[in-house]
Image 1 (tube, rainbow, N blue to C red):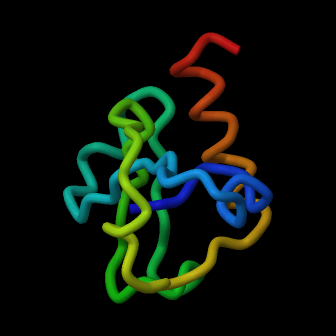
Image 2: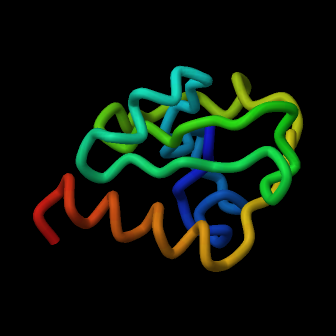
Length: 88
């Protein structure tokens, strides 16, 4: 999963976090708003797709550890995808 929520919210007393799931099914990269993440630039162990059409809220207790960190350009693509899906 990719945490979408702002760091200030993540560090607050909120018990939840807004995320988008990741999938290794690269066909999902063709869907509007979704973003392909290459393993070589994301720190993930395989190429993956951020599925922004399935954003959800999870309890923070489900977040165990960090698998990687996106570069600013990739996060910009994700933010654009979120905006597309939400009509912002």
